[in-house]
Amino acid sequence: MEQKPKKRFIKKLKNKYKLVLHNQATLHESFTLTLTPLNVFTAFSSLLVLYGILIVLLLKFTPLNIYLPQRPDYTALKKQKQLEYQLDSITKVQHANDEKLKALQFILVGDIDSAENGKK
Image (cartoon, rainbow, N blue to C red):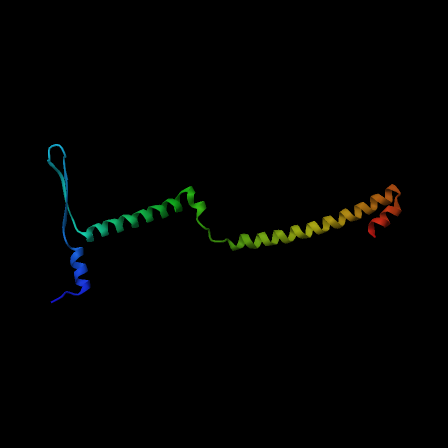
């Protein structure tokens, strides 16, 4: 009977392989490790998750957090809009005052004709 593909895949993941390190000069066995593809996959997945958690913690709790997008502070945005409106109003008043000052300077200097020509 032929096994289902899923069962064959699971069986392949559970096959054991031996990793042996030998000293080239003496052929003495230095290190032996028995591995399965499932163990290797689990180890690499765990390392990847730990690496991701480390990066997130590093960005969150160190000065590197300036690279993360911050949630907007709506009270600050409201205050900024209010200040922009006040600045616009003050600029308009300052411009009107400058025009009045120019007209008065023409009158004080006695050059009334230039003041009338400047308005036209």
